[in-house]
Length: 337
Image (tube, rainbow, N blue to C red; front, side):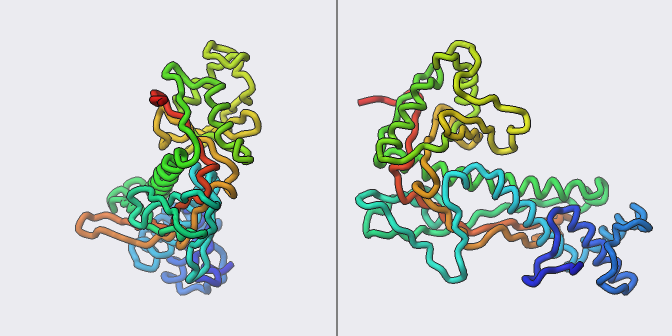
């Protein structure tokens, strides 16, 4: 098995695989053995020898680059399969040199996140909209002493920290765009301060459905999901069986979201959604797009003066809501004029 693929990326699907490959790399350097031999983690290599090889390899530039490349795979995989915000939009990987230009719905203002990632902007001119791109990054660091003291568990935690930071930044930007787009064509629904009722979700759904679109997702905070769990069969707030909401099992509780279903729509929970707010969305094809100029990339970024190993995890994306009619929201304490 080759250590690198044709694009020069390490053949590793997880940090553990990366460490095994780095052990192989260190063994090659130490023993001058052929690169087509088995992995150094094979039987015959004890744990202490393996840890020693990893310690030596990770202190070299080549070893750190190899580990950085392997870290990107688990981060990218978690973004694809657990990222809440990406479920609201169409993810569009951009070819080299391509411009993120998309058709805008007739007579509807598009909403995009500005190029510096600071806030949503409206684009109203022309039949097409160019979605600005911005960078999202994380800079996890690990003290060298911790690497030696705690073996390599800290590397896994660095990956987890980077993943959570990237996902949180993506979610915050997407929900900011959804928030701005929800009041462009649709009316903000008033949710009773006492709790989210079934009729509140119906009213949010109607805002989207009357444009001949189908509401497929609701995004909410855990507080509003708790209100749903208290629904009775009649849709009130008294304790009951949960009405039409399918049971939520423990295996469906993911790191970034809690999933259930009602009327064929997904209920998705994220801590990034402000308490007291519920967003309804149509199919991603009828809502917006997330162009990806650069997918997850990991580069070594050590801090020698601080005695730390570090990495910069970054991506270049854009966020555009090209059809605000596919987004609606409800807020608690909305003043109805």
